[in-house]
Image (tube, rainbow, N blue to C red):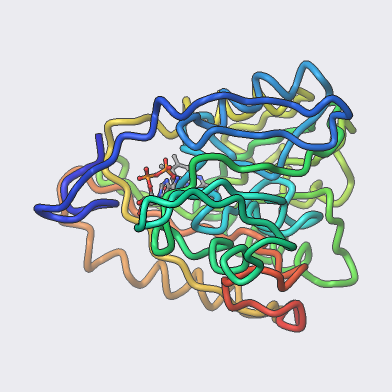
Length: 298
Ligand SMILES: Cc1cc2nc3c(=O)[nH]c(=O)nc-3n(C[C@H](O)[C@H](O)[C@H](O)COP(=O)(O)OP(=O)(O)OC[C@H]3O[C@@H](n4cnc5c(N)ncnc54)[C@H](O)[C@@H]3O)c2cc1C
């Protein structure tokens, strides 16, 4: 059920889409039709045994509908764009009750609008997505104390330098403070879309002598998203705010410094976990309604 005040309207109608399920891979394995009511965990469970994947969510519990209509930051993003960039066709129910199949060649204006337009244009019942080969991914995790903050924000800056860009790498670097621990820490959730142990481009995030904990393994996307759901349990209330900026070498340290200075203002709030994270956000195709142009990659 949606949380009060989030993803629904007070006094409005809530439509439960969970029965619109199904994950159907095409005979040539190039595409997959996904019912809007499934979660990404269910999608990867079908695709991983076939050595396939899609530009979907990074946690098993995330719903397909909200992720893909909202845009969708995927582990494949640096190579393939937003999740919605890999949608080839939508089946959508309009406010009139009409059902349309919408693609680049049929209702092309609606096709563009649905790529980031959330629930403003109708209810999508099925998504046809492009599949990508996947024989497993490398995933790494690292947790550091606050003394490592400068080194880690520098590592992120180095990674985002266009000279070092590797579209197979997807590092999400988080800075956290919890009411329970009352101390700052840095986490790296690292993914490489090929089954290559300890990929060099992500090594600056893996400093074993300074880390509080470190993990490194090759697993399937299906197992990866299950692990991620475990570390982000349901039952908590999440509020996300996002912004987008162009890479410049010193911007990460400035943002981290702003985050640090925000802590006194929230430190007395009970049971609050306060996080800020960097993630690479692709503006590769410019064929969506998210307002980012490929030129914005800087
Ligand atoms: C633990 C966690 C991890 C996350 N990780 C990521 C991540 O890695 N990348 C990322 O991009 N996002 C991530 N998110 C955010 C997530 O993508 C959004 O919360 C998304 O809206 C979830 O989709 P849903 O279908 O589950 O949500 P819902 O709450 O059901 O829907 C969200 C919005 O989308 C609309 N909507 C849903 N389905 C449809 C449909 N079929 N047709 C039209 N409108 C629809 C709803 O009306 C609502 O406005 C994460 C969220 C959580 C809680």
